[in-house]
Length: 103
Image 1 (cartoon, rainbow, N blue to C red):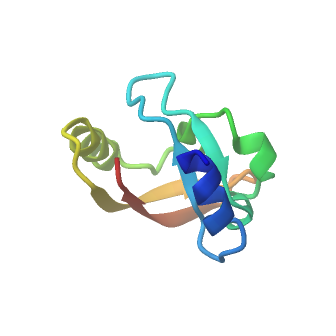
Image 2 (cartoon, helix red, strand yellow):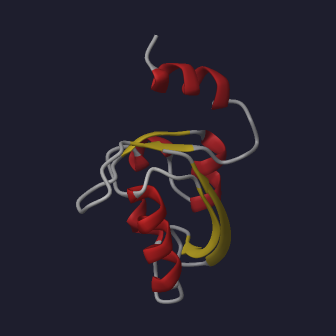
């Protein structure tokens, strides 16, 4: 069983949004490999449609560049990132997201 298959088995039915990406940091990456139904509900999109996209699709005018730069630097150094960003749903509504990303 691959790690993504293991995460799918664990995360599919939980109520917290989970998204798994590849490890590419530079554009066009990272690419979403899996999104659970709770994540799809959070962002207002079908999880099947999310797979293959970059999480950057959720960013918008109030997404702080400073936070994204800190996120990039932290992941580049192989460290865990924990922080908050303003993201946008499929209908354009903004929301505050807590990110806990582990390389």
